[in-house]
Image: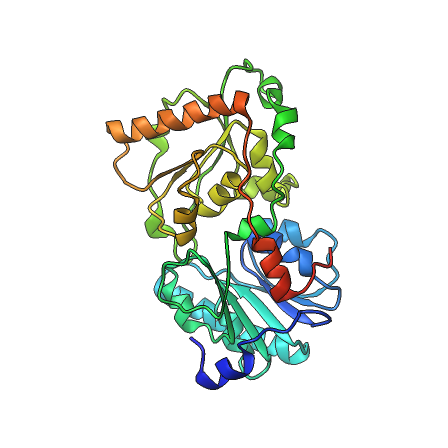
Length: 339
């Protein structure tokens, strides 16, 4: 939460122009989101995980600190968090910046207190209450659909993928039937992009629904995408757009689901996750969200059939991207994109 003296001094953001910034990258989607504002003299704090290793190797020249991923038991998380905070504070003392921007990662902001004037905390994950309490921000950026107790100093109208995923359905229109052809299926077969959530993140373990048996008899062909594969085949940067080449997406990941839905992809999210941005997306006819452990009753079968029917319908009617002013709002807050 903000201190009273900090709120009065820092409630209005700078334009972002010519500001040296420390970007905290804790998840592949954070790299996707922040990349457009990177300057050569900025610095990075990047979590150690496979996809981020591959993305970081993509020609970046910025000074970078790698930090351990906060996971495991409560005591392990505390220990890892303290290690991150200590390492980041030393890194910031050696690299003077005017601003630090973090999405959902609190330890870097705690480390920056007293060293960095603007400390931005972005989040769209209401259940990450511990992180909200640990962060020591001067600015809090939340979606207008936020459904938690954390108070915003600034808001944006939609969801973050709308700031980095191009609202373009042409790729799928030109590629219809291509995936089927490559894997030897009939053009009539439904091919679905599937990514299973591992649940080893800081907050998502309790949100997982074990759906493997329930989807085995679905009349679709699943193409699996794993973090380890994305790290080695060069697809880490292309994941959001790659998902559009398929008839649909099935996943336990709220991030991938949001990235697919905004591009008009018929998407089935199987997760207990509750997010304001999922409520925001719930009006989209091509978004289906199952949030119950019981997948062996008529209700789930009905939803799965509706999802498959939507995939078939989309083949003839096309797709409609979800567009709003999220990108423009962030440009006002962070400055015009560099790339």
